[in-house]
Image (spheres, rainbow, N blue to C red):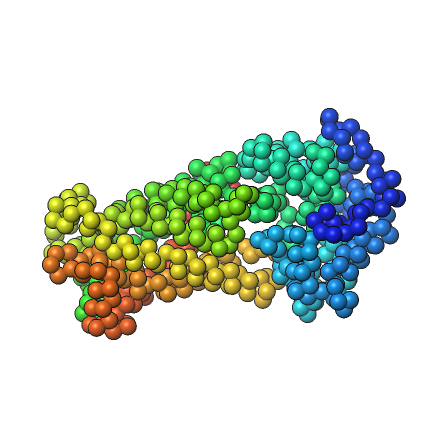
Length: 509
């Protein structure tokens, strides 16, 4: 019997004794399945695993010791993260989905930063039991192998739709002896060092990251949504969540904009009084209508652009890697931002339009018409450059901070497994706030360029920087930052809660 994952590394071939124990049978027109393994009907035990692999206890012990020795290159009797990473690299596991640190955390039961043989053996026992359980669930005919149609049925049941070509690629990648079916040995070798919970969705995404594409970091759009049966429903759920979040935080957004455009000493109390005097309670929601209208086109354009850019940036297998994801995400954000930018400028003009109490501000149509007639079409793109310049730095800081915080959470709080929704929400909130703070000066410059018109308006982005620095100092670039940060927690929480509620309403749970 094989030592496990040797086909992806440089292990010895299976022994003649083990090969002699393999009995191939016909299974629905497919050859290569082992003799049928009966459904357990209860708790899975290592006896079931041994039976499925046609191994004796002694052979399994030898296999696991061989794997441990392979990783333990310096014969120290324990493994650290460097040795695990080196071992995975030797097995030719693509760098994008190496889980060296996660694997160390899962194996390291006593948290001493290294893994001895007993800890390694315990991980192997638990993982093979877990893999056998899901293998049995997919192998509905219980003939000892997973047929392509069974794998397709499991993916569809999980809400993932792939075409026949992708299914064939999936089976071919896992099927080490290339006979068109997946034995438990193939299944184990493919997933043995995947340290997270094994579900059909996680397995698909694990393969997708290794062989096809990586969807990347998209706000409220789950990884793999482009392959999902209900992709349009996810976009609807995300759109409704975004609209609800923007509406709930609209007062803070208008307060931020009012403070940003003040060139004199800005006071939150004075800004609140001004908003109240101009329109009462409804004054705090001025501009929210067009802000909500932006959600659907912005999300759709960004999502479509990201998918197209992956095809351009990715290699022949569609793999774009972490840097590619950052570049594709930044460019997609830039395309979406430029496409809906006129709406954003009109929103800012509406929010900063001064009017006496009792007098209504101009309608969106009239305001847009006045800008076109008095300033020309180019006016709708004032401030676009600083807006675009902030996208990639924000995404990079946000992603780096998020991954760092998530790793810290996994190391010091949850110790193993993947972080749950609340941990992810917390990490996302903090990383988003950090990213927004770092690029806030660019946001302030954009807002000032959008709001100003006429002879006294700023001539360029550098003009805004220079005049702001001379008149207000460095603190001037952070006017309105406090209400902007106050938006972060409620915005993220409302988006998450509404999104989850919409998923249930649309039967996406």
